[in-house]
Image (cartoon, rainbow, N blue to C red; front, side, top):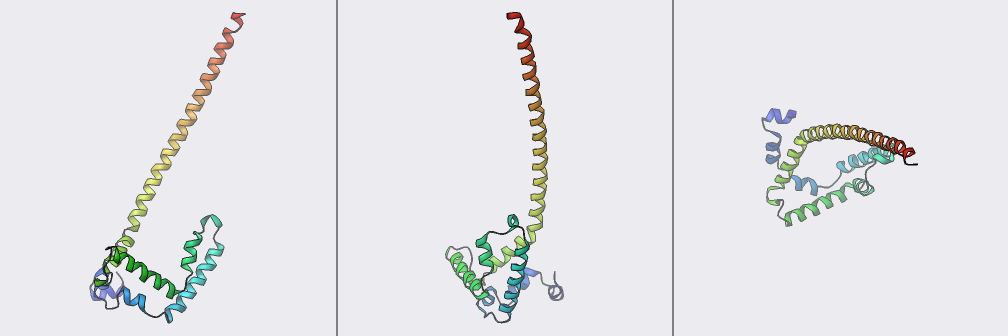
Length: 161
């Protein structure tokens, strides 16, 4: 919990519910000081991306979207919110609070998901090592049996002459 939430005694989600400046107000507000901070962040992101090796770079379409001006990003978010509302997945009547709550839950649960994925990766790597060991064993067994069969056939071949 941040300092403001500790002082007010409210949990982060509760403080989001009680704020008058909702998601829509933030998206519909003019850029101003936010636009300058956004431009600075985008230039830092471009500098960082230039130093990133090619295989680790994000897809071009994602990069292009991230470099859009703040006002364009706000328009896109509002358009997508209207689409989601049309599908009945979110509601403007509560300032899209359900979406904000779901995002907050996802952020809080990222650590658990990351931990599960890491544990699954460790298991898969162990399985791969085990399969590689078995593959080597069976290849050696196959080579041994091939040599044995050749030796038997060679042993029988002189007798047939």
